[in-house]
Image (cartoon, each protein chain N blue to C red):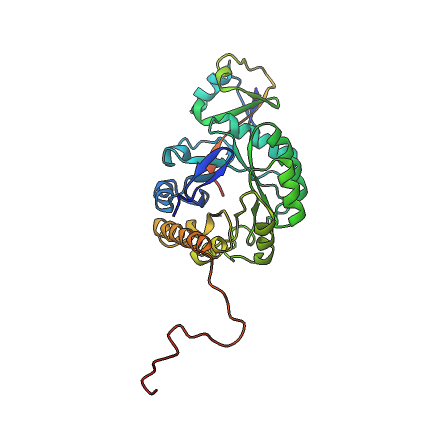
Length: 255
Length: 63
């Protein structure tokens, strides 16, 4: 089988598992990234405070950093955060995350399109977190996004692919990588997203809240790889009715 | 006095001096002064004045 790579903004990746870095103690981050085999790790930007230990010192070298714009409530705030993140000197990637509501943390698709347009023009590799709506996904493509990142379920809920049917539509219709982000709580759910043809999945809470963080990161890595391999293989068909024997129907002993 | 991340602090001569005083590494932060980004290469040359408002940010874990 030919090597299975994918690209974002001119960068090529072999791992299809993007790891979030929130909610871990800093000393677990490196092991989580390594066990996940992740080549892209998300970060957030916050005011400097009295803590001097930097998360950047806990992420293995060579990993692509993906700052998010969490905390932004509109396009302007997201653009401001993205520009500051780029000044930190870790590249041009940005995950746009714009929320107006703190209960469900649902992305504001309209503001996300606006921010995508501005940041793509400024040369960012824009990865917009979005509610899976086909029209919005098309607008994001036209605005210059590098991919789309539809949610599976509300952030941090570990509820899995609640939006399954709409993710499928995006995967079928959008040419850019579709990365299922948010809500994936189990390796089996990550695997299912990959079987459906997602380009990659992202998870954070599922791993950060697991009993054994590095081991769960590894479980996700295997699940993502298995799902991808299944997608590339072409899943076997489903019978709507009845059964179909796997063993020959001739040569029975009683014949 | 200057305002740093919403807090009033005694002024420092330059952005770099402020970072040093706070124990923040220049290569780990981004700085906005009165709404404009200050480039890392300009930290030492950027003077601070009474009433300046600074936002100094750094990466933390996030999803």
